[in-house]
Image (cartoon, rainbow, N blue to C red; front, top):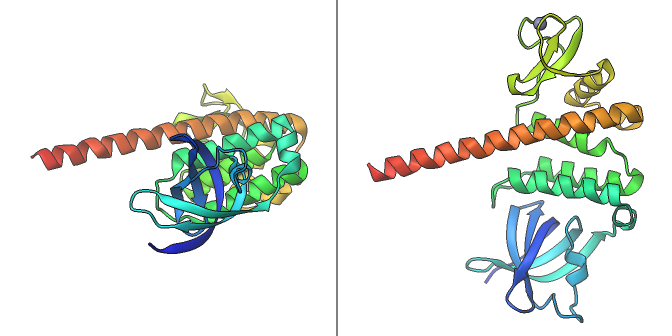
Length: 245
Ligand SMILES: [Zn+2]
């Protein structure tokens, strides 16, 4: 069996047999992996506490036939502040869920790995409520599905953009209702992130706008994940039909 090392974020874990756990990881080199941590549910386990969701760990694993086996786990960042703050912990959980539901096993995605670890570190450093909305916006850019925010998605006007219609993929002007209201500050913050000015948005956005952006980001990611699930279901049905023919 081959032995390998990789750095990874723990996405989630679940019980296996009496003392073992399955650990779902998003690794830098190999993307999403499902691995077994043997004996971690015993009290004297060497590394059980290091494999909590949200942890960034340096791992050594054996390639298994079905599941890889974790033989070593070293913590890269302790995340003391993040775990002590319920809001930050909730936001971290949301990031993990987004990545878990959006990536397939065994597909390496270094850009997304960098984004996820960067967002977790920012939550640890500053507990910033803008971490989730900026992560979502960058993620949509990475997937090539960011909404249009500098012109009305129906008539193309660049003036009086007052609403957002997520299903139509962008903002609407005052003459093209209806849609959910969006403030100019929130719309501009999204535009900044789409253009790569994330630091500026993290540092210079008012709290009220942060709340608005969190709500918009939740709707954007929900629609994106639903669409992804639907298209993979359609793809699966087509494959089934083709193989049945
Ligand atoms: Zn319009």
